[in-house]
Image 1 (cartoon, rainbow, N blue to C red):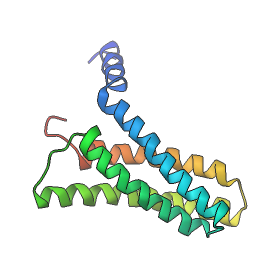
Image 2: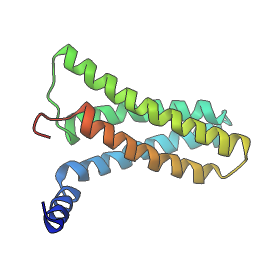
Image 3: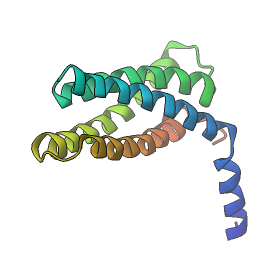
Length: 144
């Protein structure tokens, strides 16, 4: 494949319905995550690690439903396939949760750095990692 063909293929994917829906629903789940997180940390004055986990859990639930139904259009109905999807989806997000928890705890909790800055950094890491798991493991189509 020539470099021009690769660029064309990349541009086609970057403007695909799948990626645009992933981004749109990603924004929705990120808003849910951030709103819950900042209410719990700034209004309720909850510990950042616990608030991070609660916000994460709510966002993961919304993300699974929207990714399965609208983004990757998975039509699996068998228990074994559903358990695989749910397990790998949550497993991938647990990995990015642990990374986010460590970064937030160290840089916000211990070093006193900006809560907003580190929430942004961990969100970027999570979005990229979560897309990779969803696209290439959880909802991988046989033709991918």
